[in-house]
Length: 141
Image 1 (cartoon, one colour):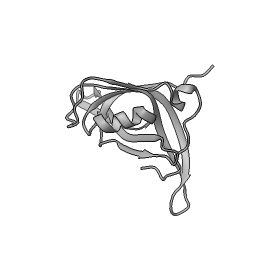
Image 2: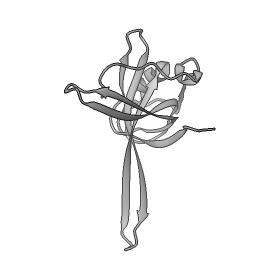
Image 3: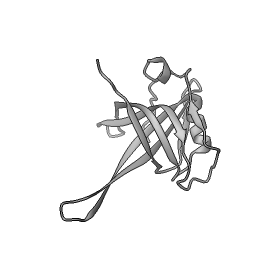
Image 4: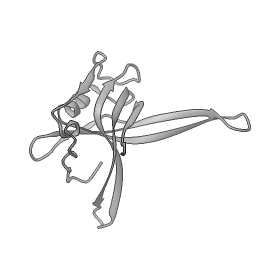
């Protein structure tokens, strides 16, 4: 048995970028930041911020593009995926992303596109069917 499950609550680092595949399926991409705080052995307050690349497919991705904005707090539930591509110089690059199955918009965070607390969830997308989402052949952003 194996499990690939990620649950994050963080703030958007920039507005979602929504694109459409050749067959018209939406895909939204945006980074979120999660931070942890602790006191080190010397009594100094420390903070570490981790950035996560989020990918949201289908209608749920369109909804994220419509209502989310930089600074907005969001709950993301999904799985970790690593993919590779060749850059313009022909070098192989690897990208690790969180493919979201569920996104919940949380309050606060400073985004300007304000919607009531809502949940974007899709059951008809490939992410919910157990199949991997289609590969977007564009260079990642």
